[in-house]
Length: 505
Ligand code: BG6
Image (tube, rainbow, N blue to C red; front, side):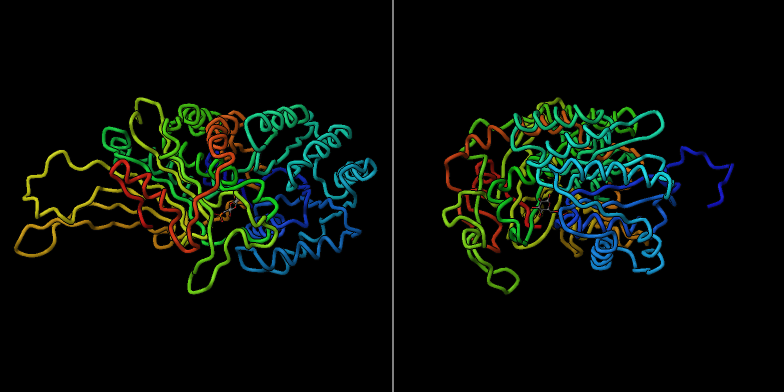
């Protein structure tokens, strides 16, 4: 690319390309690597966002050579890439794909990995820079991290950077996440640790900040003076797929409430950051997470559910307990809903209702601000019977966009006010498709931009919210709901107890 001397280098609209580097992936045969990471690497290459001097390294136990790994990566990328397939892009990438065989407790294999990184400095000019992606079960973290420490692979020195990417779940409770954080921090320096919460990589989630802080229209009413309640929904129509073992030990609250939903809450409730930087944004999110309160009456305001056999999109769906690999008496929840508070001046008294579930009628993630009713209506009661609360809905996925719901006069000779909606759809306003969350986040790791990655204090503050919930639920059986329904009845009763209703997205 020809550089333009008139352009300000701080201009964030310019495509940012990382310095020469290698990406090392542990767990390359896993689901995440095949479905998300390897396709994201291809998409970045296709968009010209990888440095010319780049190498992709896989580490696994299989008895493979470089070509076998290159073939797996090619297949994975072809299957799931977002951008069109261009053989010449792949050919260029394939020349810098390396594979190192070994198990995590094998000292020789890690020595070999360190040596391969060294060689790549000479052959591919990666400049000693490397990001290590731990796409492996958390139980494996200690041994891998210790190997990296032993071989000196984790050391960022003046001439090079070394970064580590940690996938959720970050522990299973506050105590274990502290342990994990201490371990990671003992091997890598804090600014070299990237904790991935892929919801933060979604375009619409980032748009929350643009919507709030780039406009005059919304922020003045974005407070408890005008907002009656907030509903954050992450609904999935899928079940647990092939992840029975992981899911049995985890459940909906640990799987997504602790991370994705609380991060959405933090972005919704936070104050304006002093500047748009990793440090300031993360500081504001942390303040919110520390201010989150649980309801006193958990019996009414915290609900967990488990799907039973039902129907979804005209197909019979198996019940959770009948899924392969699931205990027939399992008490793991596949649905969780809770009413939280945010104890700040802006949000005092406003309930934040969070819910998530598998095998719900459709896949939808949204944040809805439900406003108070107008303090006075100068109409006859009958004129406004069809008028609900104003709502501002940020649709994270699918149909990414924003909807504003408000009252309007029905055409005709009488006065009648009814709800209407005004829609902004990404697909209609922009020609460029949004990057995949992993594409964006991988690029940020290579660029060293931590804005969209939670700090360990955020992770710990989130566990401090979840731990008491899990304690309360321990030993109880989740409430049943049929696959294809919007969760257990108790979740509806939870809102009804305060005269409210869930949105039906
Ligand atoms: C993951 C959870 O973090 O997010 C999965 O572990 C869930 O259980 C997934 O299905 C949903 O991600 P997305 O991007 O498809 O909404």
